[in-house]
Each structure stands twice: as C-alpha cells, then as structure tokens.
Length: 328
Image (cartoon, rainbow, N blue to C red; front, side, top):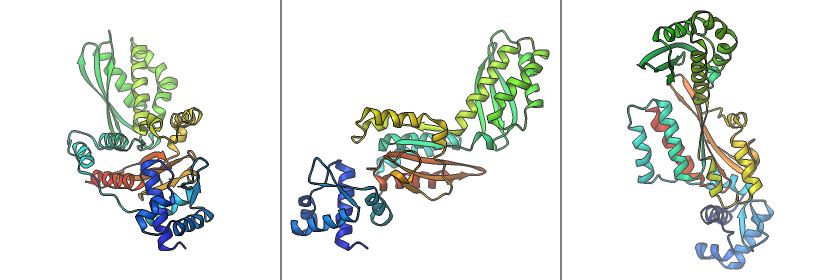
C-alpha cells in the first residue's frame, strides 16, 4: 500500500513524463510538494524498489514502469474534461443527420486519431455476422449502375459499378440470379460463392457475364472488408519520440497491416478498458484502450493504440463522449 506522498510522487512522475517525455528528477517534485530533496529521493527509491518507476541510464531522473502506469490508471488518474474545440469537432459529425451510424463512428474515430496523434481502430460487426438479404440496382447512365447491398442486420452499402457495353436487362438478370442463389450467405463468403457456384450459372444466361461477374465480385469483396475494419492514423507512431527505432516502427506498422492481428483487438464488453504493454497481445511497447459499442442489433469495437506514455485520461474521456453520443 502506497502512502499519500508516494501516490502524489508517482502521479507527478507519470503525468510529467506523459506530457514532456523527460525523466523526472527529485528537484522537479520538491517544488510541487514542498518537501526536502532528501525526502523525495528516499520516496523515489522506495517506489523504484517496488517496481513503480525506473531509472533511465542516460539521466538521474525516473520514468514510470508498466506497473506504475497500471497503478496510475487504476487509482490515481482523474477524468480530463474535454476542451470546447474537441467537442465542436465531434459534434459536427454527430449532428450530420445524413450520415449512417457506422459512418458517424468511423469519422469520429478518425477525428479522435487526429486530436491525439494515436492510431484509431473501428471493428464493425464481423462480415460473418451479416448475411446477404437483397441486392438492388439503380441505373445511373448507359455505362454505370448503383448496386445496393442490404444485409439481414439492416446494414446498407452503395457501390457504383461500371458496366460498359452491358444492357440494363443483362444487369437485372444477373441481380435476379444473385438474389435467388446467394441470399442468406454470410457477406464474407459471397465473393467465394460467386466465383465457384454462381459464375458458371450466370454464363449460361448472360452474354456479358465476365464483366458483370467481376463487377459484383469486387463490390461484395469491398463491402466485406469495409464493414469489418477501419484504421486511422497508422503512421502516427512515427510522431512518438519513443518510437525512433526504425526496426520497431517497421514492426508496429507491419502488425497494423495484419488484419487478423488487428481483429484480435476486439472488445468483449462495454466497459472502457486499458491494456498496458504486456497486458495486450498486440505489442508489449504499446497501450490499447478499447470498448464495445452496441447500436440497435449491431455491435463492434472502438479502440485507440498508442505508446505506453499515453494521455490516458484524455483518451478515456473522448471514448466515453463518443459512446454517449452514438447512443443518442
């Protein structure tokens, strides 16, 4: 159990290091707590022996350890009020009535990524959880149509499809075949079913079957990926001083491009939870803050990935604010 003074010292060290990325010396703390330098040094030695802070080789100051960050998040962190500027940027998205909820979440997380300089992840309902309910088309001109894909979860996706030199009757015939033969299939498996089961059938009834097959195959493939995952600010790790090692940056970026690994970030419940370093399975040098959201029958994950030296209270406040507003 830490004493009040030890808690105060640890809080100062964590918040100083988060803000300035510099080790904290006893002199910095003396001025804030009005204690002698010897007293502070003794307390810092105790905190170091307990594993809450670490000494940097290049400095006499101390920095938080993973255990120190954990204690700070659990017991010392205070909610950070959002700035008017942050609220205004997010409210612009919330008040746009023309945006579907999925787009509101995606655009809001992009803004949060820009505000914090961390990486934002949105994992929507898995494509496995959405099954094709219907495909409709709206003619645009002689060479293009809008394909409207509707799932059993009520998700709607629009996609412009180029169909040069193909009659509208042929397009309608293809859509009719898709609706008759593919409805009820998980979205993630529609492209595969088109390729191996539907393409041979389309070729018997539709002259320009190759053009139409390729167009719808790509539309379903794009829908499957868009519906399940979005990353914003992948390169933000380049802006973090502790990630100045080329090999480490390459490793992080490679992991962010691994779809399966990113999907493993999925949150299991609606609490906002913080996973610091070794507590997450993504990378021991990062922190992941994530939570599950549920809108109507759809659920997903919103997450922020950044350095362990993350502005925890700000990120938690931003995610809470986003969750409260998308419920409305």
